[in-house]
Image (cartoon, one colour):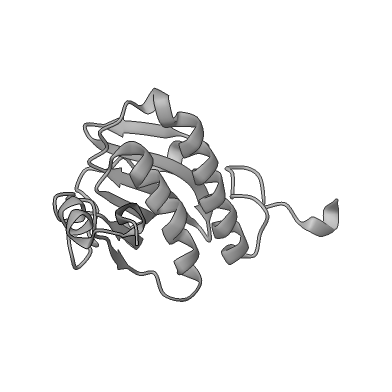
Length: 164
């Protein structure tokens, strides 16, 4: 047997052990919410973030509903203090505050929703289109969950497919 067809596990173990992002923890990824984990992970990977969460803003403040944590286990489920509330933002609004990135997804069920990326290290310009695409995927999943086809916008009611 030739040596180039053998997988050297020692080399593999060394490469993953030295990578702090080799692990991942999930919180709130049960049931239908598991569909958010892939786009959240893709956003975190694209930006170099160590935390990605689907966050709902209610009257009580931000609540991380689904979390992909690449740096800690168990997953940190509390979003950072001082996150900008995206209620006044029309999707797809992107805001960067320090290393926290917030993408507004819209209002569904009376609450404001967004994706928050913590520890983002890549310049926004290089991944903006990818983030917008993935945010659209998350917004579509929220719309399906809410039983509507679009977010609630001030002065407008959600569209009804029977009106088309």
